[in-house]
Image (cartoon, rainbow, N blue to C red; front, side, top):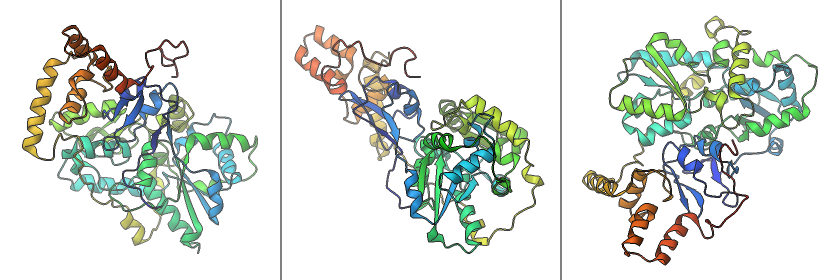
Length: 454
């Protein structure tokens, strides 16, 4: 799969968007502005966490993905998915029934992402043991890695230099099949993603030139496809397809799934806004001395992924129950894998991306920061979003970057009107720039009210 520069999985359907600001307020990186009555995403700041998609009451945000018709392009078709996919199905659907349904949909082979997790556990422990920058931060969640890369670049060296499980599992599946004499060009690896961040990570891997994954499938979409063909009774034994799955692998994507292997010398945080608070403290050396820090963008880890259909708390409960039927990773006999595969575990260095800097020149950046502070003195500090920016601080930064004006603030604009510094016509045009024409006309069909769409 060739890599598209600055690829983002999340897109905006401008025909659906009504400029309600829900997404803008939910975005942890202030990547969204309202322009012309619709949401506009700053590609440099977006980390594909999916909070905008989750917050939108009119489903204006969507993710691009491949469909099952593309399976026919390959002789051998691999379904690669994290264990949370199994966890979202009600208990009446056993893992065997779900595996059978996937085969019925056209896949020839099935691999759960966490199958080679025992290898990753040992490698992470090795990295922690020799690390000079502690705590080491998990590289599991692509949204968190991108967040650190852009918003906290000084912490990039703390990220574990190992590939995420979905990358590792793709190489693992290829190794297993090629050992059987299957040619690589006959194998299609289709990753079934629980979130937009992993989709973006597959399309544009951090620190890598390209991904070995050949197709991306929306887990929500596949869930419905599985329900359409799933049988009431199991007709075959598919347990051999799960021979390397472990308790540790099944709970890996849940809170403390990784951190539990470091016991008291670790900490786990889920929910990207909570993660931001921890990273702020870490940057200021206010985090206790620990070895390992597990950070996950979604609440309840991948069980809360935006592309999952099931309730995240029920999903966690089912996964924990399922995991008890499997051995621990330490109890499983080690599998012999090629030297080439073991070398693929190591990730290429992640470079900082200073997109939050006001200027590449430090002196100019300092001047702009001081100017933004002076502008903030004039702004009301209400953070209403009426200007099309998420808060007054973001508006001040937009101003020093030449992307906004003082009159964009509706409170200042009202003051300027009273002082007759601007005309009503000019004030109206300013509002239309952010909110579009006729945005303030009465409309009883507007969405976005209290709890609507959630």
